[in-house]
Length: 294
View 1 (tube, rainbow, N blue to C red):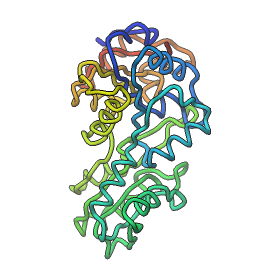
View 2: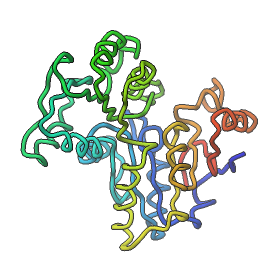
View 3: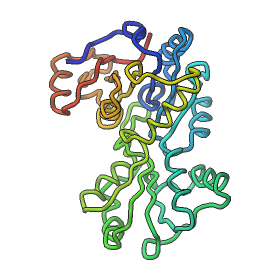
View 4: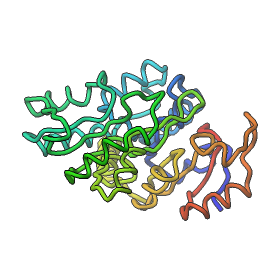
């Protein structure tokens, strides 16, 4: 059973670096969490480094701007690394190939970043002639479901195209409600037998970048045993931490809230439900906390 803690201060002395998730931990898509800002800021004030690590398909500079808009203070973190950053590198590796894009057409920051770093933007093509597929999310984030993409996925699979997923999350909490992410579409392509390349958590490249940034913030190498990962998703945050050998804290009021707290808005975490929950997942976070606070 994970240790139930009331605040980060109970365990902070054991760590030099925190890798904190963003959505569901420091904000909910509509407003920043003051308690999380305070907790991370206090950890930094004690000499620790904080890297925000997110499966957002946007480059980190855009994530940083979004944090500013939501009122999350820059004093609470040292740097941001995003799934979008990893995706940019993957797109540059495929420079010269054409892609079929699944995602909101107005979200162009990823492609602008590729153009700035590679000298030219990616080439787009229909499924029939594309060299691979890039999925950054849903075309209509608020109304579509993963099933809406099944016919397109069958056409993509018929051509055996690689499917690059810029956000491995299945769902994200937006102002108290859950909305689907690119990972939910990628999961359906995998079920067809398609080859999916994931850019973010729980896979190694995003953690490699985060540790590099943490080392730069601290001015030296990072000891993995002194790294703490914080997140609200067992499938990505806690699994990724386990694969990297990091301790982890599960924020229970995020996407798993209903399973761990029940329907009541301010219900406390149910210890028996948490124990069964981690057994069902086959993953054991080091600790669990209702919300990230000091």
